[in-house]
Image 1 (cartoon, rainbow, N blue to C red):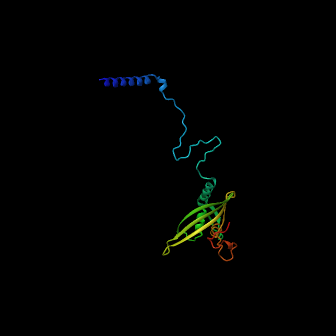
Image 2: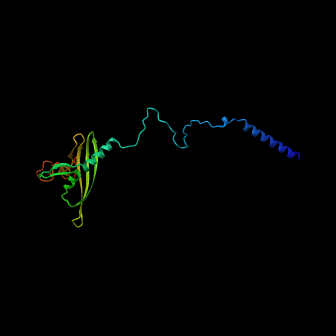
Image 3: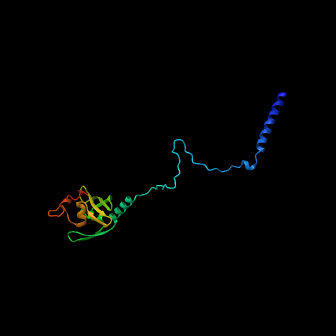
Length: 193
């Protein structure tokens, strides 16, 4: 019986101590006060940093050269220009259509791709890759053409960079005898810049 009394007394003392600790705190003391926290790095990750006042954040985007190149590709692919060929025929077509015309197969199916390469300052090389498929032959004839041009942004002007480009802009085939520009032959060979 002594033992039971001792355990009960100890339990009552513990209960009183716990209540005294809980009752001693005011309501104001137990409310949490917000504190500013700094971002903590997780193990294995770099330390978080906050940019200083002089730091300009880098935003992903298209560079000026890339944007200009895309505009020139669109220009070569969509804007019609008037060209009079050596035989006196005048065409008002896009550069791509003029290159296709040099194949001499108006009914053939074709596809093309235009690529602009920056040469510095305001000069570009514009290349039109074209595949012409003549289905009137058995088997069908596939011809790959490469019209190359220089484009000057300041002058807004295309000039020939290879024989195919020269034929497209002037109607003169540089591979025929007596032509002024024999260096442009063969038609699809690139002329050095």
